[in-house]
Length: 270
Image (tube, rainbow, N blue to C red; front, side, top):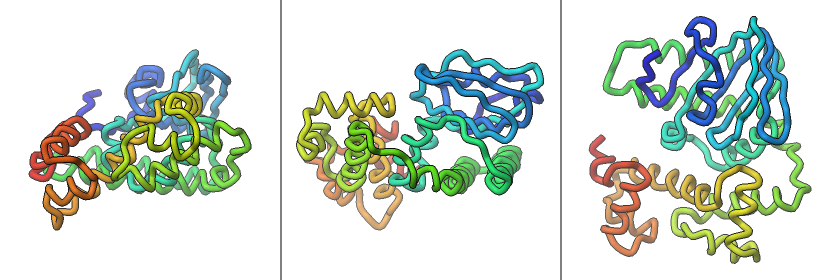
């Protein structure tokens, strides 16, 4: 399989691929069609069967993946860069990240399975279309539909998610603060101070819950704000820099280059 785009959809049987080939390389979404798959996230073991949706985030430590001889699944692969660029919503995404971290295997009822089937079919159709200048952008919009449908499927679990654990409460509070302030505040110390904890402890909390440091979450949110502002061509690059509280254009340009791999002007030209 030639992996041209930052997203792909494969079938394990038709394409002769094993799901373990992709763990840690993509955000992996496994829609089990038949058979059984077992795996571990390093703490707990899971068994997934027909009608289950399995999601492995790139930061997950997935181990001991075993599939039955009759196992078949459709596997949606999204790169971290692609997901970051087209992520449609950060508040639900943050809660969903924690929920999926705790529940990497989720059984779909009939309605949810039909919804996921429709989304996977849409991905398959769009990926098979001829090349065009907007193909990547179209796939990004398909991914956004899928993400919204995913939160719809998970909404009951998200609303009931147990946050009685102090570590989880701190982390979700940190995410809420980051969502509100990441446009202008990009230092771990700022959020740790509000939460009355040390930056080191905040990063420890973040790693415990998600496997990622607090700085990475701040960057996720800041990137979301950055892309949103750059896509608004009514604002000049100087205005975008000012809105994100950069000291000067040089600092702003270096930050955009680091996050998006392009200078601000190159991003807008694309």
